[in-house]
Length: 322
Image 1 (tube, rainbow, N blue to C red):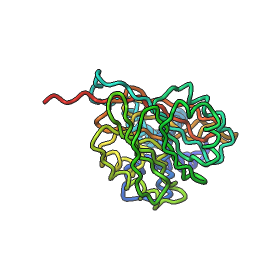
Image 2: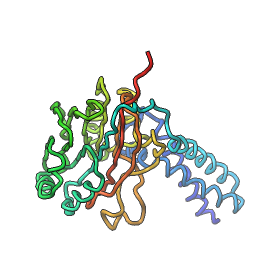
Image 3: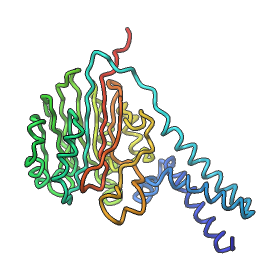
Image 4: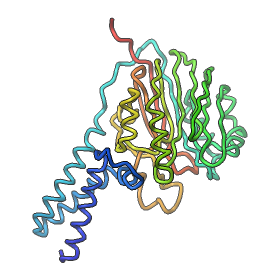
């Protein structure tokens, strides 16, 4: 390894170390920090092959430094693949299956989305980036007949959201300065469940608005069983999202099932530019409160979108013993 290559390796390891520290440096909150945090834990884990290469070429100090950064990445990633403890589901309540699809406002293949959603056979469908054009394409299919209860806040660009349900619902409009937010109580067979559909601003384009959106979500504390789905534009590595989880008593459905390292953006099937790598960050989430147990949480491909969709199956939690 030449001195130039060794110098470049040291710079790379330093960058990996910064990214490993960034999720925990909570006072630092800006556009650059938000972008760096989205690279965790992959950037820190990338130090492991550097450590191996340095060890094989006799660069002991570089090997140790890279090994420490890589070990930090392993320590942060390992808990994300261990299922979280949760309350037992109530066997007397029926499961509820919910999807979320970021349709991408410039999506030209949205007409293929109804076929995908039909096969998933969910009880509730939630959407972000729902435009009037997307809504017309969805209504041209057989899908609306299966979901007669709907809240549709279609809007231009990325601001629209929607919720379709097989079961009767009661909508609760709320004021929001950002993208449209849907709040509805679903009259599910196992008992009412509140569904909140959100879409925050981008932390790279509108950082202050994004932080305000998440702070607003952190103040939501439903009294009964609830699910919050949507494009949060944030991963668990962002302290702003962790504050939402702590403040409202929410849990990420993928983390509960030990799939915290699964990613949702950007999908390589959307644009040739992303085919060189798979999705590297989860910014689409289904959050549940203590009133629900998570039975499953998986991803699915949304035709024409740059986001993977998600399917979460929940069931009312068993009541606590007196």
